[in-house]
Amino acid sequence: IDISIINMISFWDALIVASAEHAKCSVILTEDLNHGQIIRGVKINNPFNLH
Image (cartoon, rainbow, N blue to C red):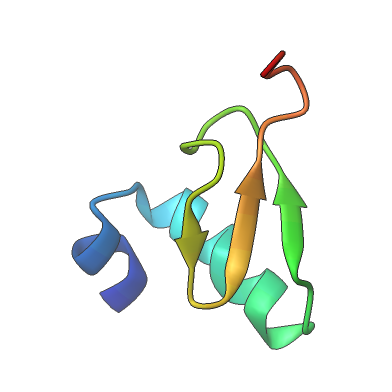
């Protein structure tokens, strides 16, 4: 819940980030969060971002 509140993202997106952090993943692919954002050491990449 802290991740959700601090980063102003949905509970479900925060759950994905927390799971990635727990599994020691450094990157997650999603179109639902901001490309390039780093949350708790997990970098967010949008696979559909053309930049």
